[in-house]
Length: 267
Image 1 (cartoon, rainbow, N blue to C red):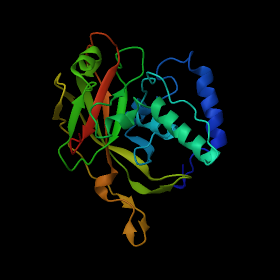
Image 2 (cartoon, rainbow, N blue to C red; image 1 turned 120 degrees about the vertical axis):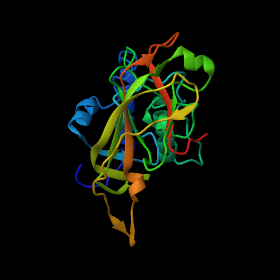
Image 3 (tube, helix red, strand yellow; image 1 turned 135 degrees about the vertical axis):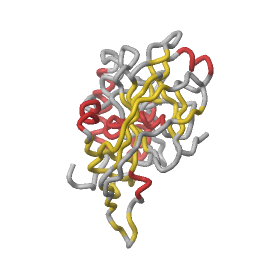
């Protein structure tokens, strides 16, 4: 990436991208268009490079980098609106594509760190997801909690797979700075490295449970100074990656879900 300054896709490029999505929707397998398949090998090497955080917004080209895959959206997506006479067509179109992207990414990594256990990241492979990886932002100075499975209801929890044995990877960025987009301001992280890992077994529990963290080293962290203040403090530079090693099998679906990983438990 090099430069931290990024721009979101233009309306024209969004239209082209959306047309491609609609053209391939019926033939693509779950998760085929989503995810970074290189994450397992990068984690084993100890360096995953960079991630960009747009305040939790589902901006497709960035959200895909936070997991190896995610399940395709279910249900019906938003209808494309027709601008009224007092509306700017570009504004209406931009909002529509933002809503469309949020819908398409309903099972993306963002859903495991939105503070809501009724939403979930669900891996998108056509098996139980062994080896699939989810990355979340987490302040690793604090005790971290996890809500395993799809927590929206007991029936959905039991119907889908839940993670059983997992590898927890602790990650830290070496550098951070504001990322300036066309419509949003985020944080760009570089030089993200593995600072510790271990394997644990989760309980088959539809609720919060502790997520023990591995012993971690603390490399140097640099945040660019803006207006006399750092763009980001150290506690905002840490992440966790969860690798699925085995699962509790669901009664109906063969997708593995994680509802939330949060140092503050959330809702």
